[in-house]
Image (cartoon, rainbow over all chains, first blue to last red; front, side, top):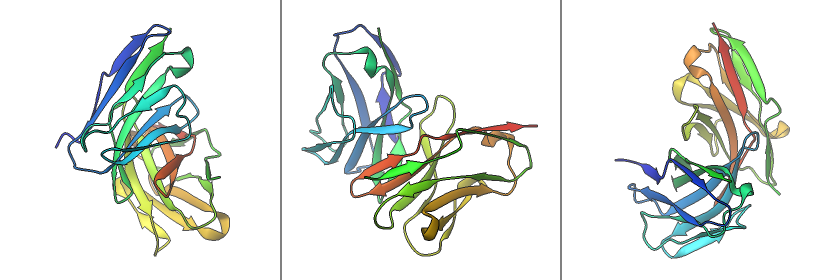
Length: 110
Length: 111
């Protein structure tokens, strides 16, 4: 079991560029989440999904989009990158309220 | 709205000393409560969780936490800290399909 994997580990984007952060889990969990972590701010929920084909907004969804075509994958898309999106992004999958986190993607937008 | 407060941004303890990290939450009903640990450059790992029942819960790595409904608190404790416990600790509340995290407490352990 690889658990939750995220790619890339690091990325630098220019303002206005777009990119997709990949998240895959091999535990057959229905629930998956995207968070961003900023220094001193804890984790903020961006989007979540309760199963394939179902997604919903969290606390800070603006500037992001998600899709969930399979149980395993939950990609996060940034369409027009802005400096405010510089952060560390964590994906998690959940079963019985226990969250399993990926190692994170550190994104810098300059 | 739900919120989680960790009043201590940073705590320093000596190795072998006891530890208590504070967590207060704001929620209408009894939420599901969690403590996570994050080592530098890593994701979060679950230390322990409280859903119902016994208000003192045991977790991994020798940690325990006590739920006190009257104080809306879920403080994390360890009797004797090891140098490897140095990390960031997050308290979280689970409600419905969402989780809310505190801002974290950074723990430094001095020899």
